[in-house]
Image 1 (tube, rainbow, N blue to C red):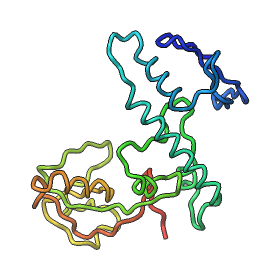
Image 2 (image 1 turned 180 degrees about the horizontal axis):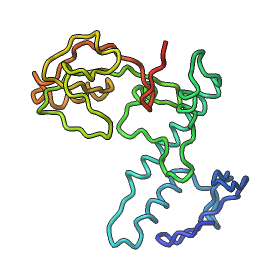
Image 3 (image 1 turned 60 degrees about the horizontal axis):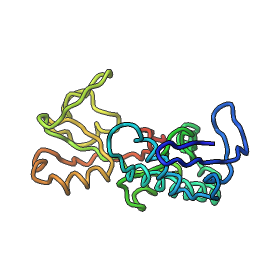
Amino acid sequence: MLSLKSSGITLEAVVTHWSAAGWHRFGEVLVAGHGPADLATVAALIAREAGFGSGESVSGADLVARILDSARRTAEFVAGRRAEPRDPEGTTPFLSGEQALILGHPLHPTPKSRDGMRDAEARAYAPELRGSFALHWFAAAQEIVSSDSSAPMMSTLDGPAVPTGMSRCRRIPGRRPIWSAGRQWSRLCAREPSSISGRLERPGFPPPRFVRSIDRTRR
């Protein structure tokens, strides 16, 4: 039972499975004294409650949209895994584990939202559907690169600390190696073509395939 002060409404649901780890399972959500409530209604009520008492006007429209998007994509992921439950041949244990989180964190309101991504993009990049993408390497002028790391940094493409597999490729003096997903690169070019002209090049580094975490399967 959850009483919402902002609306005066009480939501009820039967706990079908109680978990000490927090992975509870619930039955149908009901508005006390009225009947079943769909996901959009529950999301809107909770979003309104989140801003209650803050003194600010909070619509919650973005949160509701993300909740509905997350639920829709979760249903797609579950259906996809039921249709193809086994990992493809050659999948490493690490990669299998990275792609195994189908439902997301139980306390996150929008664990599988892909806000701003088109459906085709989301499917291609989704670890839940075993998506993968080519990682593109670029040579960037020093003045447009800002970075920090606890690990030793690669100075330039003509220096000694070049990533494995890049030493066979054309080196460009005075440029820093930068990696990007194809989606990031295409959007950058569409938004700021003039600002990167002449300062960002694609020297043809061989793109390994990556899934969510940076993982390259040795072949």
